Figure 1 (cartoon, helix red, strand yellow):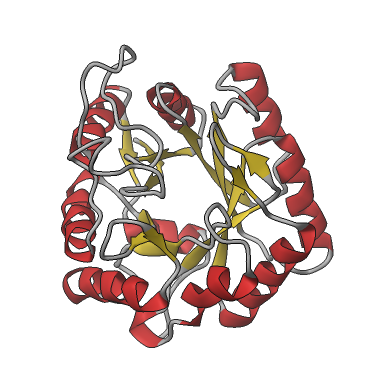
Figure 2 (cartoon, helix red, strand yellow):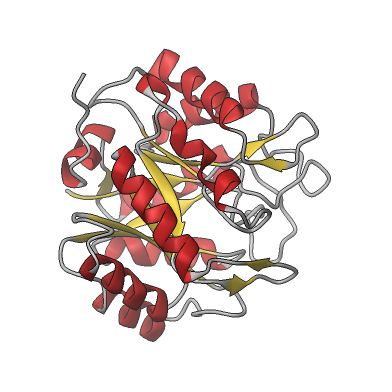
Length: 283
């Protein structure tokens, strides 16, 4: 049976309790959701921290609380979930805040951190990622032994990843989240998807995500084309294209597992994902 990576994105920076009652915001809520998600084949979890008011935060102490809570039950070793933290510039532009989560050490240290490969617009906001900022973050991840989760919204971002490789700022094996459906970037169509995948550097692993109702389409495309999936309420809070049914993260994970099983695919275990991405832990 063929296998695929599930990258789980439970919270993100946009969903609020007003938008959906299902989104986990507090550390204990995120921890519970991640631990529950293990049952559905998740091997990578992409974390965003929120403060006491439910607003996105960069503070490493909150990331530490979430990571420690997950690892207190999941363990910290080569069988444990791959934990990725967000170094996003969507809400704060400066290097100090964006990189604070990379300072965590020991069993609280994340395995990965997001590295968006260019500036981009979203529907109502911009995510600013200057060349200097991208390179600063890449250098710090390299120094800390944290693998970049390379986020690409179009083929230009993939091209910049190749530039970072030439400069020695990122090392293979590479891991890409390919995100489609943002109105300002590549759309969730086969031609655009295939074009981006074809341009990935050698020794790359990738997952497909879709924004809004593109999520399910891109997840299925990722499974059947030899990649993996990015899934969760960060990108989509609805169960149906008509946006009439709000859902939980677990609803989304259950559905994609049922579809994958019918297609005779199964998710990688965390241990298998770690081996593929050369992320085994030496303790």
